[in-house]
Length: 125
Image 1 (cartoon, one colour):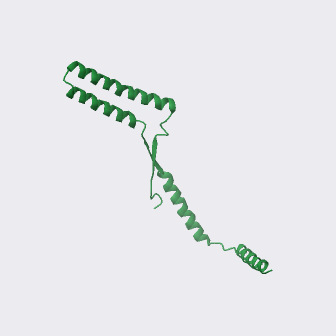
Image 2 (cartoon, helix red, strand yellow):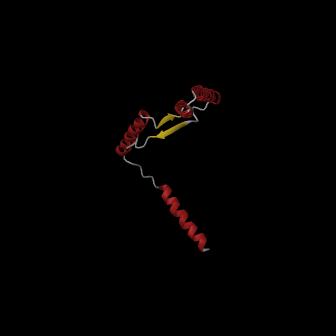
Image 3 (tube, rainbow, N blue to C red):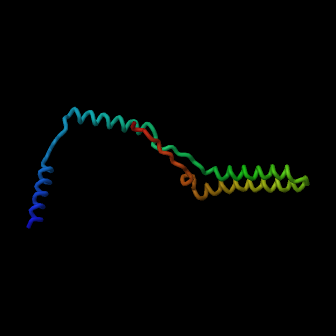
């Protein structure tokens, strides 16, 4: 019986709070709407994220690595034919990496997936 009485009290409090109709003044309402429109305009002017595409990064790292290996082969190997052969292989592998990266990006449509999105902070401030 006591539990039913406390439920009735809670229901009365809830109903009383639902009946409150406190309407803000029209001036305050207009000021808030103006501030909201200014914030929306600021958000629309500046993009929320900055996109940094990284699809070319494996290609560049591959090219740099094999270029350095070709240079190392030319400097270290004393036999000129063998050094040119090793440098040619490194050059070929670097070009094959470029070709494979371009074909892979076009076939798999990976440019969007290999993108870092950096969110700007403090747009509203």
